[in-house]
Length: 423
Image 1 (cartoon, rainbow, N blue to C red):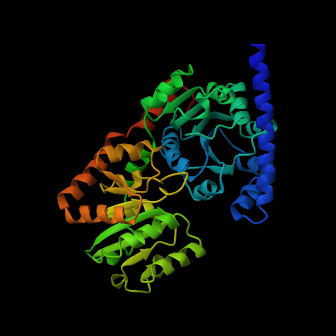
Image 2 (image 1 turned 180 degrees about the vertical axis):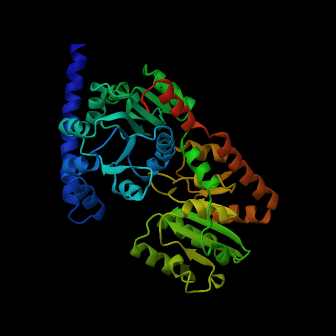
Image 3 (image 1 turned 120 degrees about the horizontal axis):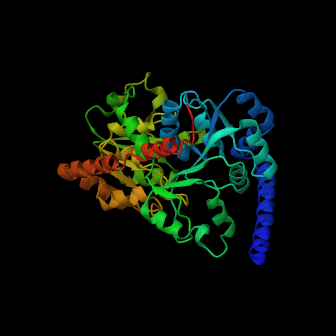
């Protein structure tokens, strides 16, 4: 026991050194990197900022690492607001992209950056907010923030988590990570494999619910509103909507669609800064930007470049085939479910293995992974020339999403049954 405590103390000391070093690295990088600068300035004077935000309660604290986790958190947040109307919800983010995506979200009463993970910061954050319930979405396991929540005996839930054997929790060196899991009151995981992994390290306070993103995309589809100008652009042609694309995706799409003259192409890139849009216009010289839609006749253009944010999840509805970017990056593909919910075949690059929904969609022949322009061209031609296959693939995608709904309801039922909040 003494040896184990000493080992944990050493690891925690190293962790604290890492956190301190991380901060100074980000601060240095912020001299020239805009995102790093946002990360630093967003946390400046955070105590006064938080105090001004949360003068009245009671509060529920929901933490999301970034924009993707925020999408998983939204169904839970909205159901909490509906069920516990007297409570307010603060959403914290680790990344600038997450924080920026939450700025206009009407169901959050306050948003902020998560302070750097030190024990003092964690204690002061809770002193100011004094939440009745804390929910972390998917991951972002910050030791001090979670430990202080546990010490104050606040209910702490992990939602839409997924665990793999390769993660630190299940390695010889993962003692600190394993301790973090004991801080949670309950863990809601996406699949049985995650539950089995947790049971292998004696973590049993676990429920398999699936992924709340299924509830999120289903709600978007149910409340669909038209996107102006898109039908005019497609004008009865077959269409490919490529969302969250990166330069590697875009180069491949350019090559693969060069001989598909009857296909209209809509590209909604992951990065919409001016430099990236300019590069896209060079790559597709016959393209038109969405911001010019009111000034030009879109029917004459084969390619439409979306140069704003907020409409991608609705754009997929207009597609015959969808392509999801990110499959050539280390972090992997973006959200496939936003496309699948509309009953559309889903295509993406080779780096998809850590995404359960992508593997499931491929197994159901609702999705296809491609590694180069030739493979993409072959899949596009096969689907476009075979109407039955196109329809069957899309229907399989839609059925999969509908079958996986319900995680949010299970989580809310737990909160109600355990009386973690009072109206």
